[in-house]
Image 1 (cartoon, rainbow over the protein chains, first blue to last red):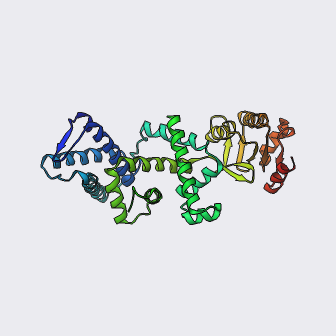
Image 2: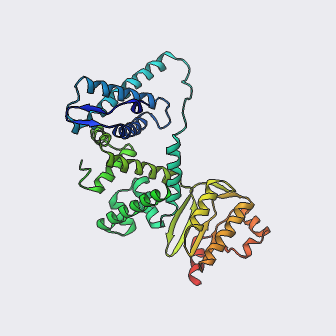
Image 3: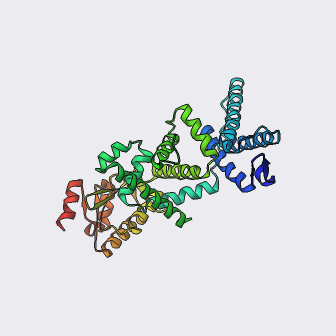
Length: 175
Length: 170
């Protein structure tokens, strides 16, 4: 993994420690998977390419505003994803057969977390579970949920964050 | 996009992002932000796991008055080692609900472990001074409940209002 081979990255106005880079790596991987598919085996390659280009940009002095680090790296990442897609389309044009299925299994860490999350969900009250389901899954608006559950906007806010807090707490206890 | 000022606004953006409902400009603005913000990323990751788990949940809970109704999200086999088996077990045995109705309409097959689980759930709820009943089992399941005489302990009903009324009579 590229982040484990690196020394801290220093640039004008700041520094990225290996721990910062590891967090950055996780955030980028999440974004890349959202764009190219959760189980696409090329996600790690795109991540490495993004980090490599970022480090090259830092060394070349192109990165000057540490407060805009998210936007800077996201821009690089978008370019990497666009190039990957263009290459993929070119390959599809030339190859008569369908590309073989190269899906990979999810990370072990993600699989463990998903299993813990399911266990935690079962311990929520029916009311909390319904609220979370309506808001996060069923695409219902706040007004719809308030009407159906007969609560005010303020009550909705309290219920939502209390339910999420319980969920977060139970998850931390489980893990 | 006020992600740190208004938590509900951040949550709305996260949900729309995960459901691919953000327009291009908003999508880019949100990604620019969370790539550089660990706090927002943690909220995003938690919400993503939550949504995935909600979508994959095999047993759903809802309240009808004071009664907790448990129903299977999809046609299922209640057999040892299956996710519905595991989730039903946790949904009853790890809770303290005293009025529990299990909707069996989507259970097409049940094995001895599944029958044993129903009895364990029944014993657990009775120990908490409550009652557990079954709703609308299929003909196959009803037949097995009769052969094993579990139906002499576990009351079964064919319609929700009738089942709800039976809890109120107690």
